Length: 118
Image (tube, rainbow, N blue to C red; front, side, top):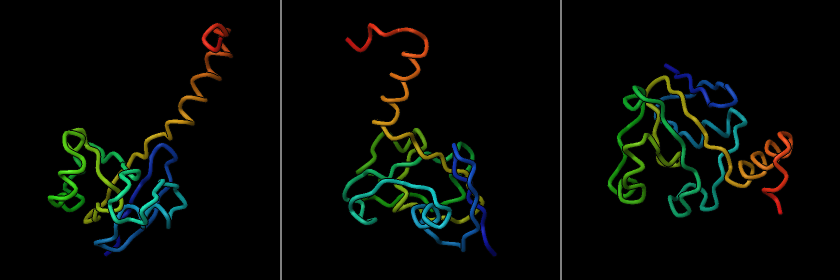
């Protein structure tokens, strides 16, 4: 039985087999999740948010992931390279911080708030 994983904010969907990692599902869906360590939990760049009420659609985090994420776990954050899918799931990929900064500057410029850049 395959599970459907939806990646937000793009709304891309992919069907995956049970016990697939979220990072692998994202690659199959064409969703970019940054990583430098190749899925070995070394870089902590592949953080994603699991929607409320869907935590049971993936295996609970192992102790190493708990230590790495700390209080972020309580906010629904997981490492996509460690999160194993066991049901239909909605995953939100956070916006890249650099892209977010550029987007905010462009929005401010459109509103005429140019003095922020000086």
